[in-house]
Structures are given as structure tokens and as C-alpha cells.
Length: 103
Image 1 (cartoon, rainbow, N blue to C red):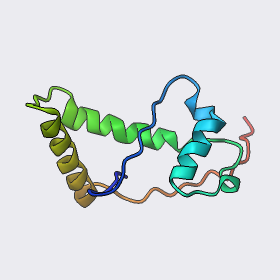
Image 2: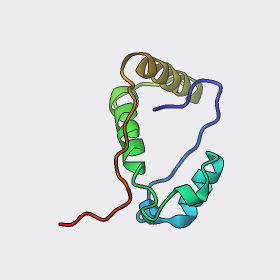
Image 3: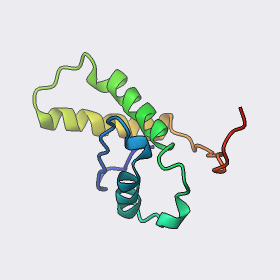
């Protein structure tokens, strides 16, 4: 779910229509070395999983936290990521096949 220590970070700003922004999707896909043709028409439904991850981080580390410096904040975030990956993370099986739902 989270990047391991020593790896790069990708920051995605969720603002208004980013879930449907083809430009943003292509940028992130390129940075993640994901072929553009494998993305399908619904661009960033996977962003919901990222938002859940940030929500967990916010609730468990940042909210009501007292940090002496940005280095302290970074260290606490990285420790939580390591803890989360060891104790709570599990694979997510994505099942959406790209077909519209008949409602």
C-alpha cells in the first residue's frame, strides 16, 4: 500500500476532477511505468484506494500529532508505513473489468 523506505514518492493532489483527468492518469502511469494502453476508459478509480490510505495515515499519525520538526513528521510517517506494511497491509484484488454497470 505504501512505498518502502528508500524508494521515491509520488504525490497526487486530489482536487475536483482529477479522478477523470486523462492527463494526470498518463503522468502517473508514466512515472509508474504502466503502459497507457492498459489503463482503459475509466481513468483513476484506483485513486479511491489511495485516498483510503491517506485517510488512515491522517487519522493514525497526523491528526492530533505533535511534531518538533518536518524531519520528526517524516520519521513518524515512515515508521507508521513500516508498521502498517508489516502488520495490516494485504493485497487488494481489483475486479472491475471496465464494463459499465447496468443500474
